[in-house]
Length: 311
Ligand code: BDR
Ligand code: CA
Image (cartoon, rainbow, N blue to C red; front, side, top):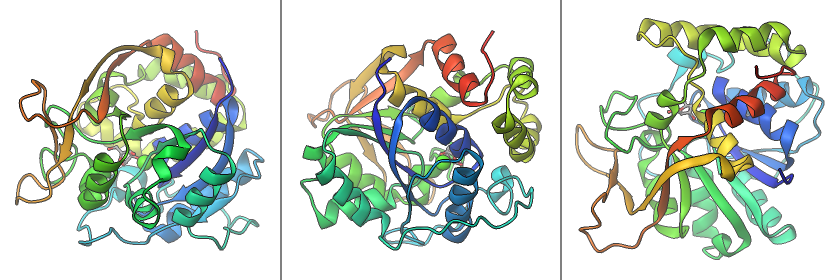
């Protein structure tokens, strides 16, 4: 597998943390743009710095937008990730500082300095949308865009039944990105649930891994309990799946390339991703929807990022 160069926009977040450890294990990470989403921006920035400390990475951390582009979101994901976004473990403050440059500006600058990198979006798309409005030529300098977001058959995970969290948090931003980027890879919530790690297998990695595994087992406790209450026995790691697809596109076994739009209105439907499955709308395709990946290749990438070996 070639070591790719990544620019990551993220709202850490439990599954973001696993994805970021995978990125640093397997790729060259050029920078982290930080979004508000799972919890507020102060927490997501702090969590990114905590994680960079833990893995001893000097990746620059760029704080982004504290609120969505147009309408404030009434929802966060603290019930899944903890009030601080990192499982309420209570980590000490990091000695590191975030950069002064805004995430949207940093994304534009890095894309000019190092064109052709893969951009991976693991949170609400606010920073990406802002960058696109500042400089619509951004997609010309991005080799590939991978987005974790959406629920392509309408089985979302928010209070608006069909909406997935990242898209539902800032639908207008998602609309701007979906309309502007050519064809991107979309890893949706439903694929994430289908590709959950088997609990016992994941626990074996947590027990046999290094300090990253010890860290992750503390951070993920609340989110695993939340999933268990919903009857899910596996470990759902949406952002880790998107990261795996970014690192190793060869693991995709099944995908459909379609037009995907974002619903901006509706008391029940705002934030839904609407897929033109039968190409009836005559609109240009914009998303390769990832439906199935090689689960063993995904497992190998995730386990290695915890210092463990996938059996
Ligand atoms: C997405 O929402 C967040 O809670 C997760 O970090 C992931 O990016 C899943 O819907
Ligand atoms: Ca996330």
